Length: 465
Image (cartoon, rainbow, N blue to C red; front, side):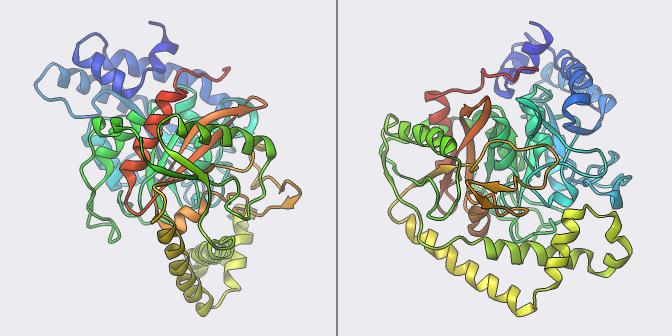
């Protein structure tokens, strides 16, 4: 098996081969590190690479498989997003203000993945503090889409998605405040899962704690489940974290026969590229082949972008408030504008946004009294230019920093589980189908994603690198 083939094995496959002693975790780690060395200068997915640690952990995994019970992710190569504190590894958070930060502690995610045996390859690129849907920043520049150099891989977990799609790691951790797992998964052709809010603890808290989720970005649904089994569950360092129902890999194989599925091409308000809608709609229609009843519908209500803008901009304004005048020129110009917008709102505006958010959630809750799942395009367009803050316009409608992510940010406001699955390409660039579940219905979303993966598999696809 050559290096490329080794690098595109799934975590589930690696685990099986390790158990049979047919493959060495050290050989796999070395192959992936060679691939990172060859490809990362072009793609810029990794901000920091940790080869010594990766090889030490691979050797430990090899020894573990010679024993009785190796940990669940033993020997599987993966990465952490550069927003996630990682002891002893440079964690820039995409910001000139923290470009040289080396944490002396691990975030709960980092602890759990380490203890589960994941071989840590390094840290993946993100925009400054995760503020936008592209992964460009002033520390290392933008991440490029593995399918086409010069196009964005999305954000804010763009480095994570680009890494797994390019075969530079099997597992990747992302965070998602307005779509930051699903956006890069959709643009890059990966599987991305945003669990229910609170399912996976985060510490330190996101700037936009009330909207932020953590979750996996992988090439397959099964690999995402491997990560979820490890990452989920409460932690006292995150007061919002909740107990998680145990999740086993075989549970996602139950299928979706008999489920009631809604399809919405625009949620009633979104501007969308016609070819993207056509591709996603064809994919949604295949849920009938899986035994679902499907019809066009969406939750009532107008575009909630104004709520996201208030909560997002005021959170960043509060984060930088005490030092803004001293550090404004060191911030990403686009982020600086968002902070300045946040300063314009009053406390009653923020409180009002939370009240509206609650009412908005109940519109979705009532919708799920009649449906088990909602399908939409993940994104309204294919990948725009790498490094741009947003596409500028969609179908003739002007966009701002996150207003263009009209299908993803509603699911952050509601805290519901959602996934993006690859469902085709337009002009050679990936298109994603978003699968949204009801309250705490993470397993239903994963079952649907797995059923679609079996019907229209994508794991064999490799970008032309």
